Image 1 (tube, rainbow, N blue to C red):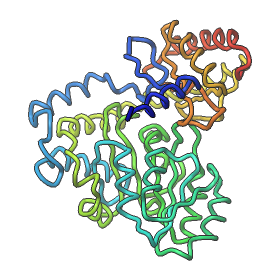
Image 2: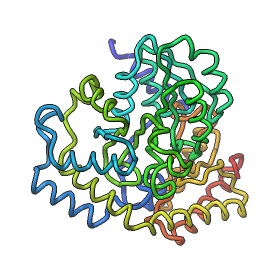
Image 3: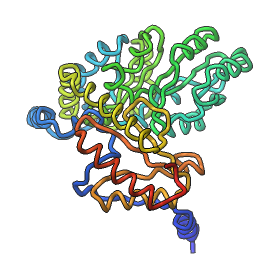
Image 4: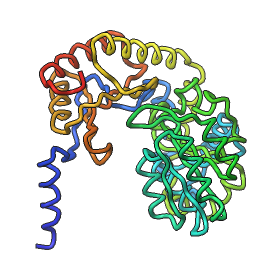
Amino acid sequence: MAFEFITHALHQQKSASLLRTRVISNGAINFSANDYLGLATHPELIAAWQRGAAEYGVGSGGSFLVTGYTHAHAALEDKLADITGHESSLLFNSGYSANQALIKALLDQNDLLVQDKLNHASLIEAGVYSPATMKRFKHNDSDHLAQTLSRYRDNYTNSLVVTEGVFSMDGDQPNLVDIHQQCKAHDSWLLVDDAHGFGIVSQGQSLKKHNLSANDIALYMATFGKAAGVSGAFVSASKDVIDYLINFSKPYIYSTAMPAAMAVCIDKALTIMAKETWRVEHLNQLIAYFKQQCFLQNITLMPSDTAIQPLIIGDADKAMKISRYLASKGLLVKAIRPPTVPRGTSRLRITLSASHSMKDIDLLLARLKDALDTNRGGTA
């Protein structure tokens, strides 16, 4: 039969406890979402969406270059440029699409692409399909980055270094100052994917934490599906880079535009993020409390000061059992397994949100301790 390989592949996934299935959200306390500031259900965002839909409709009807570009999109792009300090910004439907657009459009066979070993799949895949030569440096290791650039940079016309502001599976952060200095020393562009840092770190973006400006970061990408609580993504860069993407990026040119109603909603989210600073403060309090209590209860987390608090379990089947146990107690804590993370590092990717209370954290801690005690041999 022509599709026997599908049955075989699915059987292998199931046997290794790696089969992925979708679970319909059922009202459990969610410790797996990226809605870090709890804005997804904010009444003002819902009203903004409704207002945008009333004015523009619910769809865009075409690509940005045909019929899909409105005053709402233009206003949002201007606002994002002001926030990041870059000359211009460009909207995309997803961070995956934005990363693909950047790498595929900006690099050719005469160029060098250097990526952090743990960069997101959208970045790595874009590099694989790019005509550029791709090298990878050890995770958050600026010395290895320096060695890589010293060895290869002079053989190529252009060079692009890519890292993330906050890594989505480990929750850790690079030293962007060191990476920027290496890029400057080796005449390389720097792209920061700040999907999980935008709106969270220093109540702005990861660049601010490191006292870096738009002049230090040639290319900045972030998404609206995390802290902003909506969907979509953007790229900020110089006007020439943005104009180049508009003219030569296939993911941008040939995709239906983000609905204007969503742009109106995102604009409101950015306003709320700037105004309701208590959300970041509360989130940071929850993070500190959760880490402290885990330490006191001998639950060993990965080193992270962000909303992403991974707990390594190791075995994929054990991680799934713990996740299912927590679900039975009304807590949604998803198990992350290979190939998303390296083999042997299956984990509970615990994410905290400003929508959580201290009571929610205490309940998670209690149930988590029960689960780990029941499944001995894990991290606790």
